[in-house]
Image 1 (cartoon, one colour):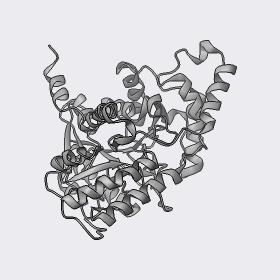
Image 2 (cartoon, helix red, strand yellow; image 1 turned 30 degrees about the vertical axis):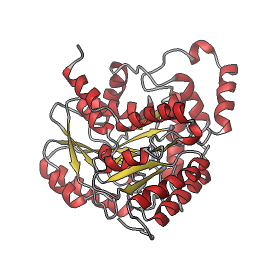
Image 3 (tube, helix red, strand yellow; image 1 turned 90 degrees about the horizontal axis):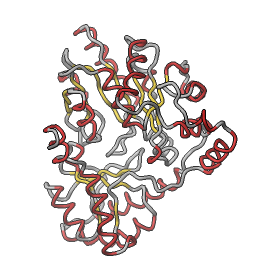
Image 4 (tube, helix red, strand yellow; image 1 turned 45 degrees about the vertical axis):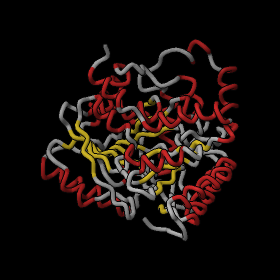
Length: 402
């Protein structure tokens, strides 16, 4: 018999993954070209050529025993040094190798830092809509997730409610920008106001509140939009990053944490993250991929591919009468359901072999997420089905707002 905690996880398993599995089932029945799976944020842009070239060169030139052996739990020193230097050049920071912990993707990094920070009953604040696994990651360490309700007008964080919900038990705040599922980039003004609120609350309660910036989509921003680097705005900021989206390497599970020296209790947090990496069973991030990403720090994903998809899908759905905000980053469109029960809308869409994820998975019912990191042809072929859906709900005209 599995544990009660795990029973709850199984019973409330990811709707995203469930849709992904459903997509495979439908593809076997109807052919992959006739199934329009917009469920999973699985990059469709190939990894840069330099990734494959680096893998081959490293395997040919480096000592295999050293390459495939253990290293410091925080990762290779030269890799962490290279990443720190790259960040300093890009963002005007002053990081060094001791500020970096290489992680098993962004998810591994979040679990490492939450394991490091949380005591049972500590509160972690998130802004809806948010990536649903934040709830599980917090629950892993007996933390309490506190959800800030969404501002469906802009999908910027609801800062008025945020200020009211910070308590002496608040240990961390997770932000995700560019955001999954909305594609919204939190503005610099939003970040400044958020930082001011947290500084004020730290003084009021005499506590440390850590801002955890979950940044797997940092490099995916359109139309010249700038994504603020949060360590520049708030001293107690921790950054979690992943190469899953920026280099199209989700299956390789490689990322890092930035733990600045300016953090309250920095030395303890840095030491704790190293131990957490080990005792959570990761031991260290994948050795080969550490070396690979260090060689590919200047490589970029082909944003024009995602942007083409973004324009095609957003403009196409808007013309059909669907309502959504145009995403500034990531590769998701968050669309208002034409009926209150977005689960019913997802079921109706599945009749057209169109797979969407209900907004309830992101604590924002009444919406659906569409991942447009798919082949352009998938979007084109799906449009007749979207058109039939729009007609069935009596939609029409152009709608740019919510």
